[in-house]
Image (cartoon, rainbow, N blue to C red; front, side):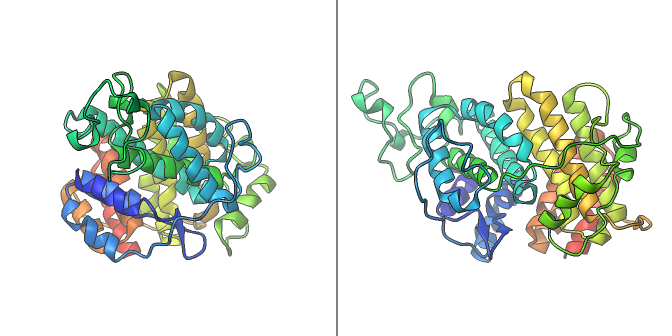
Length: 379
């Protein structure tokens, strides 16, 4: 079992929130840290992180009765049980393909942490599928005889309830179990906090330029309170601009443009609210990471929803004016991530993770400087 799987196993019985409405960032931060070679600090980081127990359920959610509890945080425990059950019975890609379009209109859920958590989980599962050492079950979790009638029932292995005895068709899709459980919890959090955004308007921006589009996003007039209060004001903005998703070309290229623009804009506008503006970049990054696991027909709606999330967070938390870019000589991606991890802050870690992704497909060192600046502000 890898360090990431050990960490996710530790976090299995924790809730998606803590201290009220604050999101549990531990699974996401653990995935980002292990991916960038910081696995040695993950368990100590979790030790120092405040966590709460997984919420209890009220009543089971039936597959044909999911609409009513959608967006009801009181049913969080029921949603966790629902998705754990679904992912015991079907390959994770199939479950994702059904629920992604249902959840996408509520992408603002949990201040976008629902989709962000799903994005980290999906990336870890795609990594597992690409690695022969991770995509198959460990010998201890496999029943002694492949012809045993218990092949379709959960294994009593200590690795947990989603360690299914594999069939030839599903074995590579259901393993490793801790990552599948994490996907279940991410989908459940998104469903429980599902929050739609105001309908789109017609904004004055150049559709080919994501940065110009972000700069044209109108600010909500009252930025005194939390994200729900701010997002509720979007419906009152006549120029609310995400009818035309910015960028040109294939969906993956347009998503990359949105992520890059949001990371760079944080460098000039993050001083307004360094933590919350992180999500303008990490939300579309989560969608970008999920895209390879989705059917092609879901790509365009995914880009539109990612833009909606980025524009909404930008509108809710951007200051009125930019500040000059801080001169930072950051050219080493590893050093940027090192500093974020040393800060101990989950938002700094996840923003650096997103910035390094963007740097990987653009080579633009300004992205590294933006990540370094964000860590300094958050820290």
